[in-house]
Amino acid sequence: MKIEILGMGCKKCSDLMEGAKKAAAELNVEAEFVKVEDIKKIMSYGVMTTPALVVDGVVKVSGKIPSVEEIKALLR
Image (cartoon, rainbow, N blue to C red; front, side, top):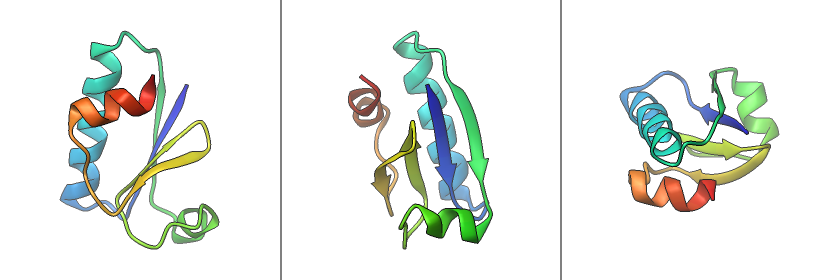
């Protein structure tokens, strides 16, 4: 599984990355985590507000930080 965090490096982006890592660990999901800060790449996903969570190329959440439990539901 590939998990991408889209954002320009703000605290919210870091918080989302940590939450995603925790959710994956709790589910025993092996994942590659990628931080995407390139605005053109972010825009290629159609994301207008960050942070955003992308799982295997599909935008799951944009513009907010979901809880670890919400992220776990998205990874299942």
